[in-house]
Length: 435
Image 1 (cartoon, rainbow, N blue to C red):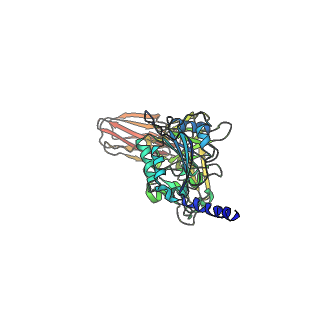
Image 2 (cartoon, one colour):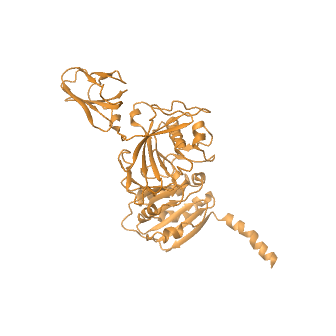
Image 3 (cartoon, rainbow, N blue to C red):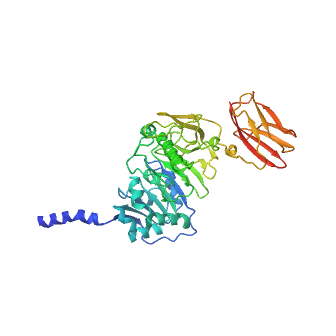
């Protein structure tokens, strides 16, 4: 009898190894036929305990259908929580654990993905996810569901980290902000853009998680610098603190969930300051073994910092990356070994990025200017000259038939402004920096 028991015990690991996946199923085994087509959605969480209200938002968008959790470690911790713990009716919750890469080609696994109304990617090791799922039927079916079936997609920690069109693969392990800023070419900084998960509204976006444990702001800036240097793309970033969630609806409106004001739960929407869009604005220092400098005037990055509330009442619009409610605009920069942030009440206003030239270009000098600036605008005829601030407010206007004018800047605050000339021949815009 002992020999038989020992034989069975010795076979168990082999049986486990031969199975490419493990399934945990809760609910009805009959596939739900959902009508109308769900609206789709995106839910990203920072990596600690799930935010219940955000998870309810995610489950509601399945329209009572089937929810699939995919992961490469762990077990069925989500099943009861999603199926019965939040009071949202769904047909089933299934967790599939990928024991190895071959599960990405298993017919049962692929069938379950193709029938899911919502897919949740658990935390874990994002390199497992990249190496197991990228360029396989798994990412193809997920992307088809997002594009054609109104499937919602979401994830926490590593599951959030892979959702942008740029992503930190963690192929060589993680990286701290201090190490990334000390050497932006550290071998652990592995950024990729190979086609993977095509989540709506995350084109040219790189996400990061566990933002406050420890702070990952510095490394996120380095990630964005790498993308600009290596791909020539002014990418954007979305960062979530550990107990914060960002849920994006089909219209591109991101709602931020958390427990603010009881706790400091924030999400961060990061982009290059549009004041510098007329120049490449590469990092001033970006070389192996040297601390990164990416600062310009200590405002190279413009960040909308949004507190997460239990109702998700604070928002940010991912269509224009300018319109938000409940948040604060902050300037970020990196000097050698120092991350800086300055809270800035003026919003991002990319009207200053419009170098529109439908009439002959005009000269403006000196620029930057201190006390006054002269404008030579050639032969545009009758024209209106306007000085507009970063909020879009008109500061000064002048109508003239002359070919030049001078603007007194002595009483105007130091900032960046737009000079706009309008005539019956068209419009021209230039930026003006007031020192």
